[in-house]
Image 1: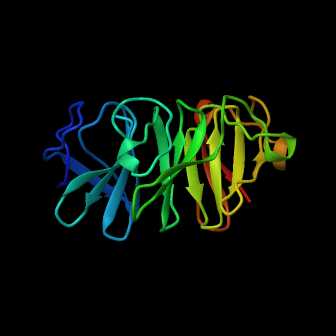
Image 2: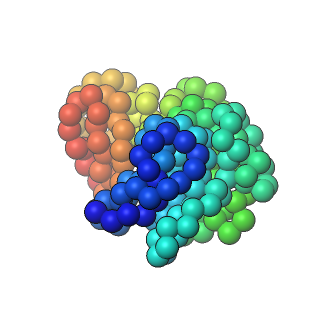
Length: 218
């Protein structure tokens, strides 16, 4: 345990609190609801769910700044990012150049350019499970997100694991289709509210919330 940022009480200001580092991931700060984090070199980036903001923390000294978000819930892409609005940020990842956020409340995947905070919507519109081949892609309360540097992988609340090609925004379903428990290939597999997701570069690992299991996708 080391002091870094936050006091553990809801709010938008940061004061000393604690951080636990595990596999280069941390949990921190003054929050309203759960913070979700990713790391790039010397900085932590926090998706602050209840405050609807993306925060940056310099690891060496604990300096905290807001990279994107006004603090008011909504749905607005903009540059600079501090004028953008989010609703219930649920997970965050990075490819080293951009941040990608699973936005639970707006059913979208948002992209934030790290260098300047510019916010755009990469994929998603209203609640649904449509892939790009079938029309405008849609998500339902996306809960988890990870990347291999080329693609994003999203744990979607409609019991699916979705893939987004970063360069094109094309969305496909790679596993799952409805609520249940079944080990199988692709959409024949069943999940029940997949939550967290990560990758080792070869496989995906999914926290299958209501099935109380860790699932592997090759």
